[in-house]
Image 1 (cartoon, rainbow, N blue to C red):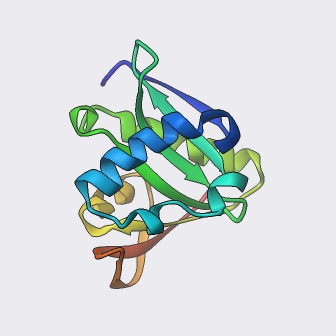
Image 2 (image 1 turned 120 degrees about the vertical axis):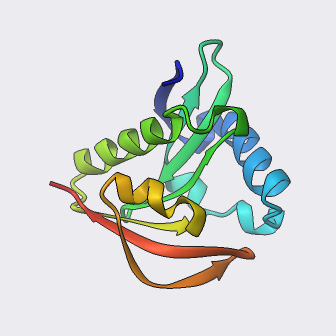
Amino acid sequence: MAACRVLLTDWAHDQARLSQVRRTVFIDEQHVPENLEWDADDIGALHALALDDQDRPIGCARLLPDGHIGRMAVLPLWRGQGVGRALLDTVMRAAAARGHTTMRLSAQTHAADFYARAGFVALGDVYEEAGIPHVAMQKTLP
């Protein structure tokens, strides 16, 4: 597992570092249109930011007030090293602390197995979002 730390933050404090990861992964790599990437939900969300041992941003996720997890991204060089799981675990702990009993997310289909290993279950059919196949997933927290 990679040496990283995950901190909880907000958009006002860490917009630049969060945006750097999301721009690299979603806009540059996955070709998500920029107008679809940035939304008003960022301002009210709790954000998780993964940093390497030199405090450089390497991953992110957000938790919306209704318990939805989204905008989870890990830079390519850091994938497969536990960064995504550290982000997901941090967001799930934060959700539980806020009293959420159900977590929901919209998973890119290639990442559905990752979320399933964390206890999420697929709901319904595959659908397209920003030109990428997704599946709705849900987990009930203990």
